[in-house]
Length: 370
Image 1 (cartoon, rainbow, N blue to C red):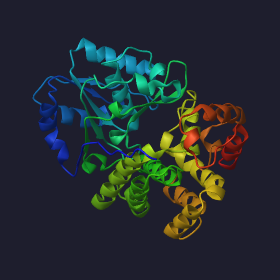
Image 2 (image 1 turned 90 degrees about the vertical axis):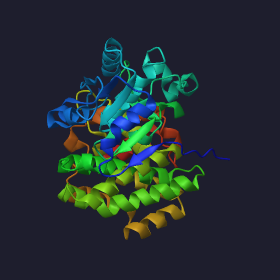
Image 3 (image 1 turned 180 degrees about the vertical axis):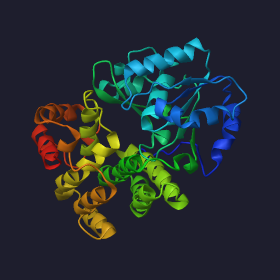
Image 4 (image 1 turned 90 degrees about the horizontal axis):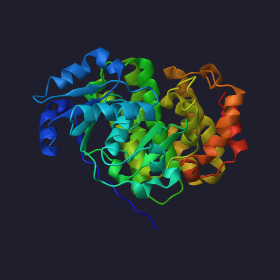
């Protein structure tokens, strides 16, 4: 028996950002907080979007690369100080996840750890929270249509806060906002999106719609990521990559797996502050090999799709688009891997991998990815 639900409202297409005032009015938002980061402010995009609005706008630009509970609390304080009544999450997955966590705090008391899935937080989250519009400016996490916010809690663990109530009120997806995204970010976020499609497809639970959505997303990513990396203004490629990210996140309610069980604790290593999508790309070939004995015909489906062994196809794509050669090149040490191998067992994605891993299995996957 499976529960299958797709309930997100999505407004997708070039130029849709111009409709932001309409969507804010529909949600009754008169004093929005824009949750974003300093890099996006520097591009002028935040100012441009704020300029579309005829209402008071407050900007919080303190989102770190891996969002922390401290940053969430700071943003929530700004929200309250300025009398805001709704949130616009603007940016990549970090900004959108931070915005979703701030939104949670508009109706719930902290700390955030009590709302994480591994702490039984699903039952503690209700819908009496402010409205939110999610506007992605990268094509990676798909957080704009996801039920989760992944946050480094005050205890230093990178954990998922997951509930249907965490879904943004509206996902406003305008591929034009990704034009000109630097090649290395296009590559890393694109591999994040493709990893969601691959892990969802391999996940063992019964959800044929999720499998179909995941394979459509994978098709778009596989045909367009290299083009988007080479030419950031290619309209068809940018459309495909934004849809790949969106579909990957729509589908992964079915469950992710060992890649994400590892990348969450790896991303929590504060001294490195590693990019999530880059980690996913580096780990994916070894995880594909690890899962091969238990995914049956799905391995052959993927092999037929890629025209070669799936692990080899992903490794070759990583090389072509400039993904780092391995965890060692990213600064990860053996001691860090020992710690992460045990932390991965506690992650909510651990239980939905098709082959349940031990700490030693996780350590071997990271060594293969070194």
